[in-house]
Image (cartoon, rainbow, N blue to C red):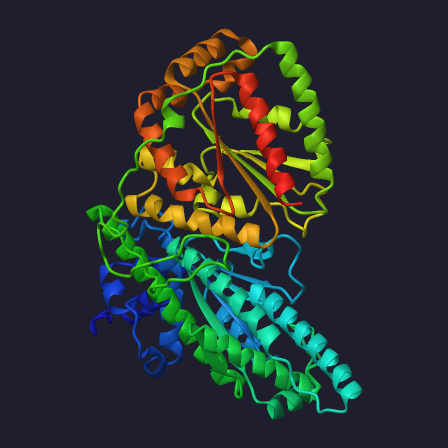
Length: 580
């Protein structure tokens, strides 16, 4: 900030000083000069900023990130948020650090969440229980515990079980017990790889992460456990008074930190110094997130693409998923995207005319069979994904799919354009939060999506709601998402319903002439007809790139509604039987 001139009245100087400290003044400081001088990442800031400068830089960066959610200033119209994961030893100063951060920023704009470790829930990825709490783009959120608390809780439980098993084995053979390492290390490595991919997809979708690990030595831990200060609820539900347990925890933590090099380790020996170090790290992360939002915006204007990921080339637990390769270079043709040849089923549409009495007889039998299989699935989650051309019969197929089920057994999600609050989260967030979830009291563990996450590579691609980089990257993001669900035990059933253009027009006109169907027809439906060939090509590209071994597509190409409904039931029955 510029200094007041020496010849100005003192009262005016005092007013200027007071105004400069107000939140509105802080917002006004977010201009190009501030971006260049104050918000550019400074690797040495943790050594160069005193308390007052750090506080000003923090609140300035906080408001600048918030401004990325606004239309103005134009430099910040690519919303980007920051998620700060806080984990580590107990009594290492985590609470003190977050308390100080909240005092130094605008507390109204800092969201804080906390969980303790629990066993991962059945039939869902370890991160799913936490997605509801993710911050909006433009916000900063601190998350104590998070998915790493669940992971560490489970690893510690595995090590305890293995230690007990080895002790029993040793006593029976009169040999010294040895600490088992292979099983828990394999489990930890497997989960960390999945979390790394999940977190990289968050970062690619404008939710940047800062991961802070607080640590103290055992002597300091024991001393603080015995002091007069009240202890918080422990993150990992282990006995921190037991030296052997703490030693095992440190062994597990060392392995975690070795495999994930993106953790910032904060020494909690001096809680005050740890808090200051933490605030510096948050400042750095906010600065990086802010600069990232500018880079993304500039590249969008240029028509280019950017991805901050490091190169990764790993399979996902032998699920048959395609490997993930992400390049950090700025490359307009990063994905070398080439449209595929349109497959015959999308061009040569069957046009039978099934007898109504035969249809009703088959329908009743198949519906009863499906209901029996769904109720005998032993609690596994089931996700149905329906896509297809407008008026292809998705709604009618879903109606027959659930006819024999109790309404409490399933949820149907009719997916349209995202709401504003959904746009302020990663692209897949609005689908993550609709998945069957063991955390809820809801009976249903079956989710049926009428339109899905594939909208990014269909309507968003064609209508320009997503950049080329975003929709081209989405194929692999979607494959990883579905592979994670299947790895956790969820059954994913995907159907593409196809009709020809002539049949679509016939159904549109029928909807116009039928009062109780008119609501199904919109102006967008007519506009989409003008881009029929583009949608068919997009469907072909999608099917070619997302028809995976773990989550295959079923193409149902027929102009006969009755045939389509029976084929949907047949495929659902087949897939459910496959997983028995």
